Amino acid sequence: MPFYYQLARKALWAFLIYLPFIGTFTYAIAGGNPLFFITKDILYVPALIALIIYCQRSHLPIVIAQPLKQPLLFLLACCSVTLVYVNGYQQFNSDLDEQPFFMGIIGLKVLIGYIPLIFCAYYLIRNKNELRFLIRLHVVLALICCTLAFIQYLLLSSGVCTGTSGLEGDALFKAALDARCFVGGALLYNPELGVIRLPGTFAAPWQWGWFLISNGFFTVASAVSETSRRWRNASFVAMALVLFVAVVSGQKIALVLIITIFALLLFFAAPGGNFKRGIIIYLGGAIVLVLGLNTEFFSYWKDSLLYEFIVPQFDWVLGNLESFFGSGLGRATNAARIFGETALVETYYPKVLYEIGPLGLIAMLAVISILTFLTFKAYRSVKDIKLRRLGICLWAFVLFISYNIYYYPLDVLPVAIYYWFFAGVLLKLPQLESNRQ
Image (tube, rainbow, N blue to C red):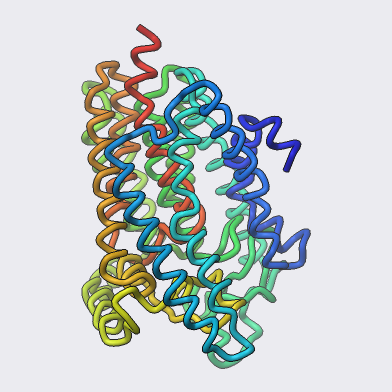
């Protein structure tokens, strides 16, 4: 950590590169030790401290968007009250098998621990060359990770890896670490029963799905804003590979969202003329190919009623809330289950309500809403057409994650990091343009 403190900027770049491979390293090298999941923070925390000290010495602002200051303090106050009064009370009245206060520490870290990435990204990206490097880096990561995931699929389909086919009962329909193949962690592969959920390079299939969704935004951002023909072509290849791998990985929700993301972003962000017509033809052909490979697409979409999944989550939380300050930080956080019993709340805002109560939910919504508005103002103030196209794609990602009502991506890698980081990049766009001028 002292080494990374001295090399704060390089540590942050390493942090972004290492992020998609955490699951693979954890299970390939550390044998699944859960402590290995925090190795990314050995890169992040020293770099954060170094940047804070640098800004203090240079008299630079730490809260880079002043309208965020009061909502962040309000959210921190709500979390502190819940940690002290709810988790603290549970600590003194719990069984010896549980450690509610340590659950609260983990829950606090998951809930707000990566918000400072807004600040880190703002000072990491100093000019347009570094911004271009950031976007190209994520195109390369998408190409590498999707290629590794496709190899994983080939190994499973050829029988080199058996997947979950040899299991019995309910285990046939659950992702299992024992079925791990090549990269990543737990997977579900039983084509005879029509169930495939591959984890790619991540620890679990749902993390891989959100990685693909995130890269739906990033690859389009690169394609519409890239100045180099070679990198623009690489971005198109990455888009196609993200779409194809979503099919073979069994990520049906990701497939639906990626197709929608591509269509909307290319309509609003792509330049006109022959470029847009070519992109529409390319996208149309890709979608026809994907739907041809995935014959269950339409029936799945018809049978998956979103409100039937989300409304019961709110009903359950409102019926099981222990106090006005919530049921305790970490009580619905998977990472905290090593310290006690956790509830399974599968959507983000009901989860926040369950853990820190209605005031905490209001505080979190205030932070996210103000951040979404500020990033919108930032990208709209940019006049440079390339930066503006990039900005609309990144802002669409922030907007989508901010008000996503399905699942809990803000608690899950990699979105829990990408969201705050790219919000900081958006806030930096006006300064990057003024620096160029």
